[in-house]
Length: 114
Image (cartoon, rainbow, N blue to C red; front, side, top):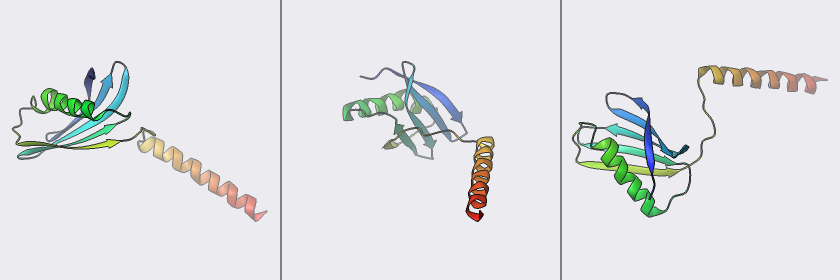
């Protein structure tokens, strides 16, 4: 059995996103999208879990996050993915990376011309 907590990442009028934390380690993220009758969820796990633990985690997500959202629902539809975090990007980081790549391309072109 997992002992997890959910740390809110974002909230809009129709969606919410949470980091899933076990002790001090992030083990995944969940994004919830509330529609008129259903809640669509994307669960990304950053470590392998047994099928039974995935079902229990989804039940906890339903109890702790979906049912407390004051939005009626007929069904919770969850897509589960396994993945790993490879980075965080924002406008500043993308601009820095782009400048770095442009400089690298310019240097390579100069070396080829010689």
